[in-house]
Image (cartoon, rainbow, N blue to C red; front, side):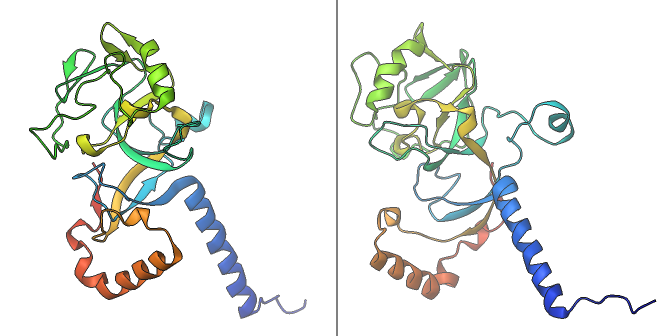
Length: 254
């Protein structure tokens, strides 16, 4: 018999690299997604500059045997979720842009907001996570559904036309296969009150933890020129240690 075949170290290295790349692609496609919080709509649960790991697996429901064996679960009221913006035809945002909000209504729920208090199926919600930045002010969205004709520029044209068909006895009814989302920072969140429901198929996953948090200017997400990007990178390098929020590192998202 001849000598056993031996792979070269170069081939070993190449194969290990290929396997690593394949696993990384599989993981980011089906299991984990990195996501950065660009705005303050979820303060104080999530801060601008929080970097999240999102579990894309838990809501990727499959029918049949696979669905029974794997740890999928239904989307629940109170979940913080990442989803693709559903507003095709709206000018304010591009369809497909990722948002992160809290699920306030699941299919069949009856929702009403009175003086900032959220009622679901006739019962007031306990919301320890909610931030009201201006307790004495009055904002569009403090009461919902909006009375006919009382829409502002924050409400998309499509939603202003569709909303009345979902209102019954002063409550909005969430249709099958859709969810009603709101930000925890209520007076500074552009959410389902202003653009409508999120279809189930647009929900990407559930944030697991904050793997890194960096103090970030409130308007940085609007600065997208090459010059701005270079300045942001330099700022990160110089202030990495001093502006990293170390206490938030590896915090679970609730």
